[in-house]
Length: 237
Image 1: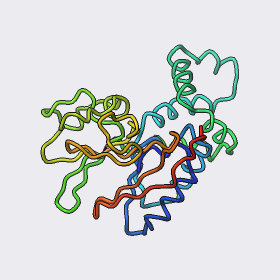
Image 2: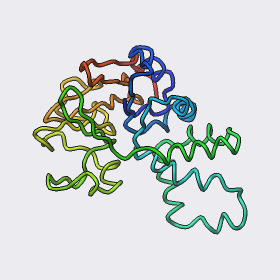
Image 3: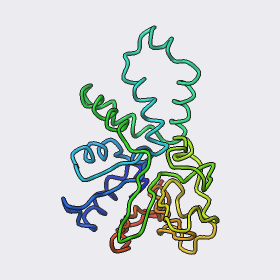
């Protein structure tokens, strides 16, 4: 899955549809939080699920930096620490839908807040898998500043969580890159907006939980099956 964006209702619906077992591993490719109404409730649920591996998205990257600052009591000293970089981070995060995350986070007790921040900071940057003799790279956004000569370790965190994947080029001939970040409604060449998109050894699984008619998707790598939540009503914002 990818880009749940605070939609606990969709997450629970898809979990039920995929019938996740203890022997399964669920990979979530970032952007669990922000926009939707229950981002922190999803994090707390994930913290109790031992068979889930979360990858960092750009929204978690923003949150990890900003929530640490919000943990501090507002004093003269903390205000002085609000330098231009921290202020820009807070403004950027707010622009990208942080309100629901902040509201739920601040309602937690201090110990749980610390646990949530540590959980987010422990998210993976990428994962490499082989399933049924097929190789996959899992990453939030894509491979920014791509070069076939680069090892994955040579990409910056920014390269992996911010620049959108280029679906018109094939990164590798023998490896599939699975990513979120770009809602499939925004892929111009996609004949089925709002559904998983496959082309040029890309698999795009962000199906736009915040979009009118958008949904949360899950892909089973063993069988190729696709699972979807009920789409948003058209009036959803």
